[in-house]
Image (tube, rainbow, N blue to C red; front, side, top):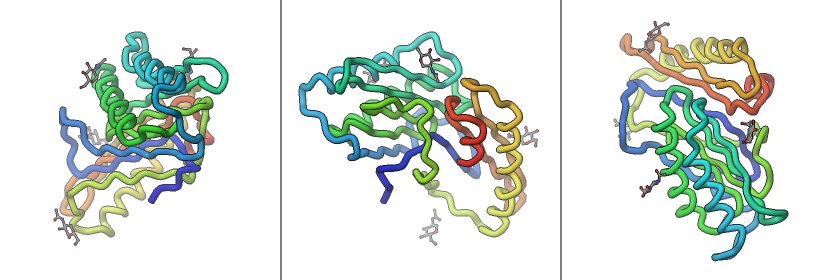
Length: 210
Ligand SMILES: *[C@@H]1O[C@H](CO)[C@@H](O)[C@H](O)[C@H]1NC(C)=O
Ligand SMILES: *[C@@H]1O[C@H](CO)[C@@H](O)[C@H](O)[C@H]1NC(C)=O
Ligand SMILES: *[C@@H]1O[C@H](CO)[C@@H](O)[C@H](O)[C@H]1NC(C)=O
Ligand SMILES: *[C@@H]1O[C@H](CO)[C@@H](O)[C@H](O)[C@H]1NC(C)=O
């Protein structure tokens, strides 16, 4: 279903209607086998729990991107958390906490995993995940809602997405939020909403490529 080797931090989320929802939606979890497994009650597992606890209890960061690492040598665990650019720090941390529970459940042995919900993405690994970029990695989150006219819908998106990409490119700054959202008129005069985001540790060139 998903190539485990490949990975990049990008959200691309389309919805016909935008609605705030407290219930976590669009769960996804990718257990990456490349890094191997950790044993139950191992130092790696302890360090993993520590690093994830640190991320979800951070009170300093307000721009939706968290990174942390913990442990020594081959037991060192690296993690990053990224939230959609329009969510508050509280929503972000709640989402990352839910993602932590999701990943530890879905990927109970793997040293590497990535996943989350529509509003956030959590990634942990035995090696640094900062600046990690792989344009082949894809996760599709499908809405239950069918579009009434695919041609019109995709036409609206094809015009909107380059505009959003352009917005990100002009607000370039390393470690700053790389997020843009907008809307266009789609089928039946309904609005089509889109948002585009890269992790702040990617360069604008990498972001654009993705
Ligand atoms: C994380 O979620 C669990 C389960 O819902 C909850 O018990 C815990 O208090 C949450 N932790 C934080 C820091 O929000
Ligand atoms: C969407 O379209 C598919 C394929 O035509 C159909 O099976 C499905 O029931 C539709 N879903 C809704 C919510 O209308
Ligand atoms: C839709 O986009 C226009 C600008 O193109 C903006 O003024 C408006 O606030 C947007 N609407 C929503 C609901 O995002
Ligand atoms: C990662 O965390 C370190 C230490 O907390 C911080 O100095 C650094 O700026 C962070 N990097 C990114 C890309 O957020």
